[in-house]
Image (cartoon, rainbow, N blue to C red; front, side, top):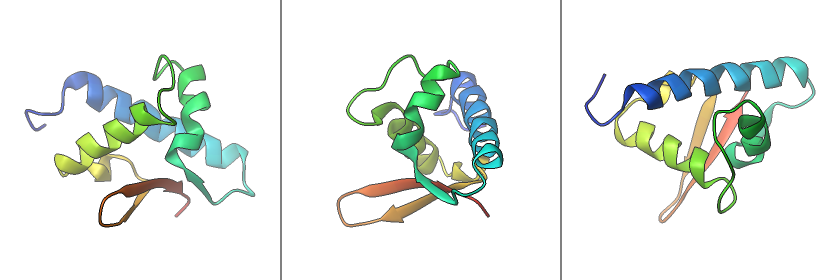
Length: 93
């Protein structure tokens, strides 16, 4: 585990991975969703306390994982990289 990823972040990442898999299992007609659109579910599950700036908590965690080279910890995450921004999605395989 790299120094810049705390145990708390690693644990939170594992919980997010499970919540996303459960979401797709329950919503079979959906194949892709913006990460920020799952914030209400992440809050309901106690992963994040509240939403800020349209999904900032999940986007920040995804950026931290990306910077640490650990995005693979989330099996269903996808990123579209543009010049100034990144768009984060969860998608079924």
